[in-house]
Image (cartoon, rainbow, N blue to C red; front, side, top):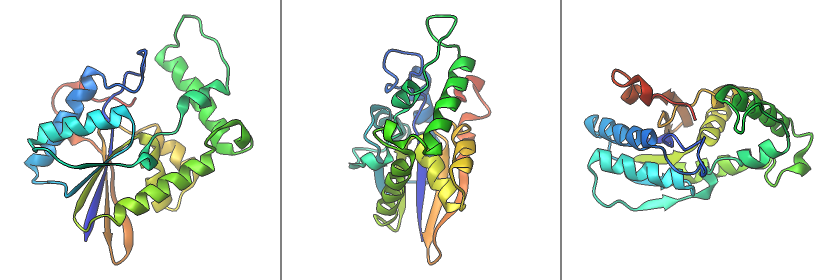
Length: 219
């Protein structure tokens, strides 16, 4: 029996000029996860990273925190996040300030996501929701077939939520509910065996608890 650990990247710079860069908090989150995995004796046989910078930086932090030496990392763009920028562009809005507040951004994001997943305007997106989900499912199939040991995949909340929703037999509605609660560096555990792929746990993040409350973040 093998296991697949799906890890959401550390906190990105959601309010910075380049979202695809980890914040200082994001770097710390990754290092803490690496140390926690090492303390439990978890040593990945295969490490897979999405193709985004925040994925790569999180992998580096996990490996450093675990005290692991040079490790070959497979890059698989199938684990990349959906393009939230193009989604937001389809729902123009305005704000009182130059930038939206966290609450304003969340409302905007929910409206844009709902429009995307409904599928009524699929031609407006370079990657409609149905293509996104098919891409993630293909990446999951590749990861499951790669090793009978422990495979660590660093990806984003969207792909993790879809992998979880699809294994539970849910659809876009369940995906939406899971996606908004994904914690940065949260770990979702899947096992593979004679029953195929089975979900064991979702969004585990005890490595962020019991210390600095500021380490817990959702974007």
